[in-house]
Amino acid sequence: MASVARLLRRGGCAVRTRLLWEAPKARLGWRRQVASGRGGGGSEVLEQSRFFRRGVAFSALSYLGYEAYILISHSSVVHADVKVNEVLDQADYLYGSGETEKLYQLLEQYKNSENAQLLWRLARASRDVAQLSQTSAEKKKQLIYEALDYATKALEKEKSCFSVHKWYAICLSDVGDYEGIKKKITNAFVIKEHFQKAIELNPKDATSLHLMGIWCYTFADMPWYQSKIAAALFSTPPSSTYEEALRYFQKAEDVEPNFYSKNLLFLGKTYMKLNNRKMALFWLSKAKERLSHTEEDKQNELLLPCCQKRRSLNQENERSRQR
Image (cartoon, rainbow, N blue to C red; front, side, top):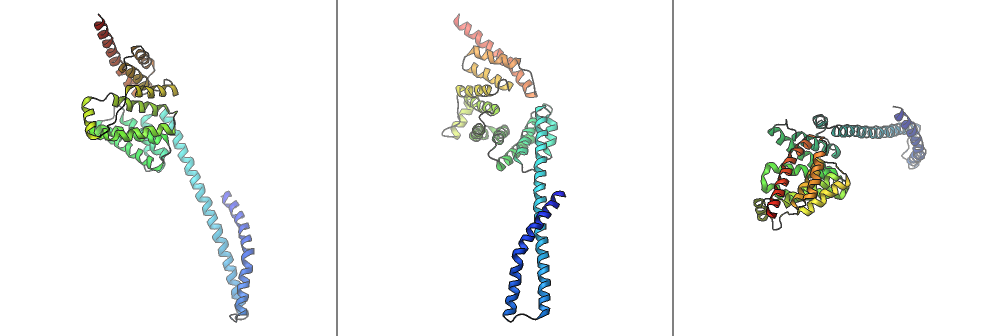
């Protein structure tokens, strides 16, 4: 209210300035009427005076009302921005604390928001809940599709945010698991484009670099039957190499060392594919030593014995050939 009062005081000054300019014009107009024979004596003078005063009062009130409306509207926008920032801070705290379900409950309240920062975080939270072991298969599918809807809406609202591109690509990839290999390969070009855009917007985001590495590894390691489908669908199907995948995994590790157990795991797996056993052992050992922070970390740990067993078998086969 104090702000409005100050505005009204400032508005009064503006109105007085305006009246000093308009009043002579009004009087001049009345004199012209009298001079041209349209005047009607003293009663018309009185009526003209009343009309002028009413006009002045109306102009002043209109101006003050408009300025007050602008101030209140601006205050509402500022208040809304402050509230959004508070929600984002709370959401980031919950995400960093691993409070997956609480984070989803918080952000789901804003599913109809037009704010891209809220929407991509909601897409991420929906996907994270879908990945929980206690989430049923039916609920998981629902959450995966909801996540893509939120990510798509975020992309429509803001195309200059690397996180928006990153999570749109992730969610689009997840949906492919429910729509068959043909759809998944078709979406691969779009997914790659958005990961690359995320890296372009933020070259220091280790997660985007890792995910681009996963994309490359997936197509370098594609089974023969999927390669046949890809070749039938496209004259130039999506493809990559283990060397390219390794570059992205290594860049991610350079940007943020030890940030993600899966990046360590895939560094080891990629070196295995490239027959560099020494480096494969180095990265697989680091992955095993890393503390588990999330449920996904624990799932990645389950893959380690398989990788190490396969590495041992390869070593044994190599020794047999040498003998």
